[in-house]
Length: 511
Image 1 (cartoon, rainbow, N blue to C red):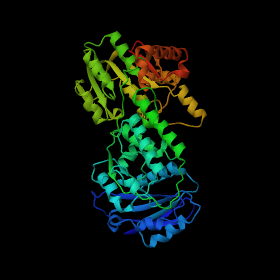
Image 2: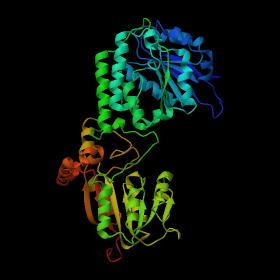
Image 3: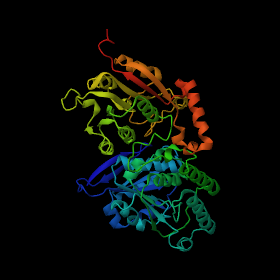
Image 4: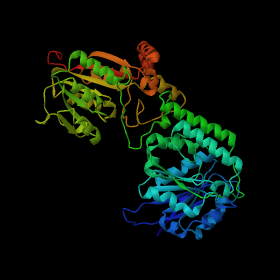
């Protein structure tokens, strides 16, 4: 067992320890002890953790949220008794949600597999910690909630005040009705998460207040995470409650209502747009003015039957399928194995590999293509200029390429920059995997400088029909058309993507 020293945010140093040389299949478990002014309880809380649990875990880490008492001093002194204890103190008070963000990030930084949150005041029974983390370790759940309401009467017998008991029941019923999750209790602070789940959800975007717990639960539901409830005993002692009950209830209801509206397609909230399986793509044909819709309409006007098409990057393969259904012979280049498998039923061939490393001069890849489709792909490449050059090799003389690129000068990005933000996300203009950013002018310059002759161009509007699906219904469709009309009038400001049809120059063009 090797000691490790941790420098805390306030300059104090706390020793920690971890077991090195563990078997590769052994899950690394952590206990996140969330603390604020817990001097009177933390020693007893740690003493109640079973010896078997201390033996199984990697470490127990205390995050003290700038307590005004001697919580940190006492916790540091207890390290002699509990060698796996790590103590960290925040420089400023980050509130309940903000402190959780730091604790969950620490668990990710430490490379843990499962982490359970224990309140330092002892309100949640440390004796059953293993009941919380074991379903995660065994792969049976992504989120485990310790519920005081699964066994009727337990909460009241454990000393939960009647007003809290009734408030918990009523608030949980309202939230279940809004969200459809069906929990016995929304408001438990006894939780275990897999770090796989924590990596998949944007918990850092949640509130710093007490309803952080509701927000991360809704993210779990949105992501399709496996949520398991286990019964826990209730204990109420002389701990001090720092929650404003009315404000907390209103925040929970508001957040759940936003989730309800998003499920109905009436509202959009980025932090709820998550997928635990790591889904990277979404259908783009639901919006008549999306890049894929524009590309397909251009292709259909030119006629697809019998055309030989090279598609660079297939995403969810929806465009691949539509081109093949119209009679086109499609060959795809795709780096992602899952996307390649989606394209296989529609494509004659899928070249699996990095587009920037594919050599089109090789005999098995040189074909006379009529058209190359590069929809929403060039911004992901390190050297898009090189790719634009080399795809001319397999194209026929006077063959065409259709390119779509996101417009970073869109009003949404400009507004965020005005506020000092540049919010990367998993899709859209600021997709975290984008390596290059373009304006409509720089898109045109990129294509012209790589020798393409631009014959046609268009601009797409922000995909409001995808973000707010109810706009696709007939009474509201005019809003989509109006928004696109405004985009055409102000393309640099409102344009979401630029779409270009370009011709591969023949020798006569170059004279």
